[in-house]
Length: 253
Image (tube, rainbow, N blue to C red; front, side, top):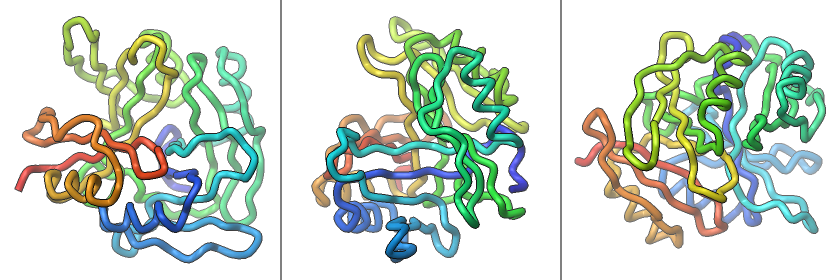
């Protein structure tokens, strides 16, 4: 994996109905949905054009897990990072594990409880999953947390991120932009009282209004937006028909 330590390298949906979710995201975003990878690995790849940008798998029967999206952060040493997360007050939900042909990964949570994966891929190729400008790719990573200052300290220390500009939002607090490798990759803010800390991900579309309509036409729900954001663009926060929250960003045509 050639992405620098601390890069977002993959995004993954776990859902109760992979067939329905595949149809929904193919229609809303334009992703191509791959076939399951095998009888022992029911995993499907979402592709933007010819580039795989995200994955999808079914929630195991009998578990209480809810549909949702999770991000993967690429690291140089999964075991060392997982140990550092524990030492910093976070948690390891799945210990470091090797997946043949894919890489080594661990599911972790920051000290406030937001879940993500850390991963070292076996491929020397760079991941295209995150791209601020490419349609069909994740363009923005956003953390809503219970303790903004502590979250900033955790991620900057562990992943080489740096603080960018701040957008003041009045009673809602600060919207802290985050940079990595000279590029703005997302932002952090304090979430609503009582809401569990979580990462959200925004995929770029070429026409935000048309995409928002496809969400509702496909049985999803638009919770916020299209709302104007800096850069003369608009964002949508939505849930898919199975209940997973996701975001879109794009221009009005």
